[in-house]
Length: 73
Image (cartoon, rainbow, N blue to C red):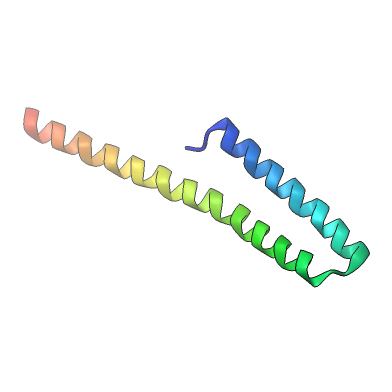
């Protein structure tokens, strides 16, 4: 599960991408556009990674519970 600091960092990254979008709209700079695409891809990847980690942790806990029941039963 992401920490509050990680969620804040993601929020800050998204805000930065928004500010860069405004700059691109003003200047039409293709380099900045590519930077925005990279930042947005990174922002999109974080929640997906956190979701996979949470799911893996849940599966690990279920397996640990099954093993514990098998040992005590």
